[in-house]
Length: 599
Image 1: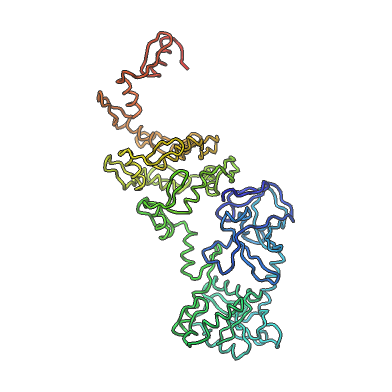
Image 2: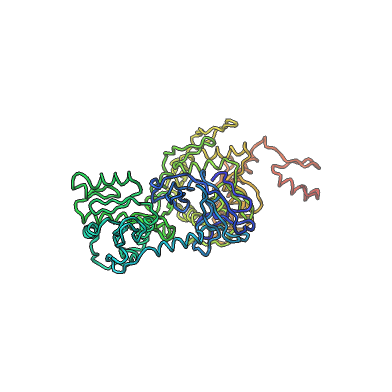
């Protein structure tokens, strides 16, 4: 979504009707105003599959109602700001309606829309009324039997589905030229169900085990009425409807000609079956199952069940390397690639490698200066909607994720997971055999080993300085470019590293998640807690190699070693010219002897 333009009269914020960003009014919009056109890639209906997000698509129709193509706004690079307008949960909540002018889709304000209101798309009331009339035109048969008073019309008139065939099947969308062909069709394809099924089509009496199958079935009635599938196969009691003469010809060649065994071929996927009953059973897999949460479509109940996991909070599958949890097992496999040494996608600007192409593409945006997404609360700018969403959490005072091992609380679950792994579980499986230090991933261990070997293969393109890792080089390059991509939302101070920003933010929030178990003193950084604990244990791990004096802090050892250096710089009093090894000693001297507080 790099460089996505949004007009000044609108703003992007978290949507109230679904996950992700929504489009809100920055000032009042009057009824009758029109926005657009909607932008997207042109696709043919046959190019779509069940994994696509149909919420970002519109059909463009011709003058006769036929579908010309689909406008698909899934790819941000081929769409515009209207992709952030979400579907209204109900007709009552809509404030925009989609209209077609020529071959363009526009959004029309159907009411006055006040400032700071989320734009929600629906249909024009006239479209809804026409749709309801269309549904009422579908006649009702109560027991699933042929109702001759409604289903059999005079020659030359239209059937109850608005099609030119005379005899319509009461259990599916098929129509036939004679009652004999219809009867044969009913006997061969529609056996009486063994058990009572719950969901019944009021138009034709057909019953289904799940509501989603009924909804898909009813949509086929509506499509037949609109004339989308007006070419009917009349061979062998088939009754299948197709959208073109070529499709009808191919269907008849594949299914109804030649070897009799070819008649037992599924007309949807061309699978061969051994009997009529097995073909009927197989055809059930082509029923479409809709997710009631997000309206994605699936061809089987199992696929729908698997998809529903994405709407659940349960994450039962864990990566054994870093303990990150996932909702599906295949996601674990895809995630493990990041722990692999194979990283084929390498950034030409900073040398960082990536296992996944989409992660690499997102990373490249970090080198751009464009930040089109703005936080309404603090006006901070971000390159992607995801970055903005993650940032919005800092304005939420609730810290809903609590560590079960200590009193630390977090706003994000992934931050809690990292805290537990590093602080409590010491989840570091990869150990350096030279210094015994352990790390979470093999890539971090490899970078660490270079500190022992002195290997520095990453070269700065600006000054030629060499570095052991891509990450170190990346941070160094920012010293040339002046880039500080991590900006504080409270004071707008910038940082070259995310860790620096996190520690800085705690100076505003007063957050001190690391608490001493001995005296309850708290610290904003883990390093501060580790250093403090030595005051309880008496541990002094930093020893001078000249005089064997030991210290609890490394900085104290460095300061001490200066006393052994005869060429060390001395701090001199400009009153009496006495010299001191440290500036703080000079300050004490100036205050006590000369009564001057050195500034």
